[in-house]
Length: 291
Image (spheres, rainbow, N blue to C red):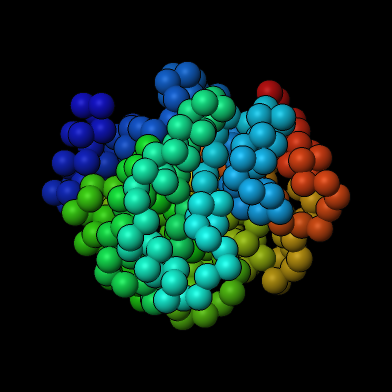
């Protein structure tokens, strides 16, 4: 872990991280076999299995053969709670709750690449701090977050203090307080060395942005990519390979350049059985990468 420690110190001092140093930080929580391999890590955003509880989602990952997961917060948090009750839960829930989830994944042989908790404008300072505590308790190396632009000013100092990367997740909604454009993401990264990007290839395309160009320019600050397909001009979610997202070129670029960027499937289009559809997505990526 000394590589991670030294990289974190450099980042906190405001020094740029090399791709190797950034990768050491971003991938610290993955299983050793994944760390040692130059083959791209294909995992899943557990939001793909939003139709089932966590235990069944883990079983589905095992059935498909997935060994890496970006864990969606609603697979742990109570889903039917008022805003006040949710705040209280986040601020007071025993961290043993997250230790038990960590153990579930470890027993299943699935590494956690990130905890996905969306730190919004209405988060209290305590909720922000606890987001980092939860991530540590899970054994995940970093946070991904469908956050708000304004919230970055509060997240950046907390991330630096906790020496943990937070990847901002983009959608396609063009709004001053939402991450959708390349500029909104680069502006966020300017807030501090621990603010990174969770690049959604489909949403970026639907917002008429160039995902391959963004990867080329900012790969050292991208902690994961979400693989989904959409059509340009705010088009719908569609099956992989039937939309406009440059999925195969992006995946091959990650492979060919040796960038340590986890590739996470995110199933959102209207399809059939969830397990069958995620398996189709995995097969598409494997074909694109000649795996």
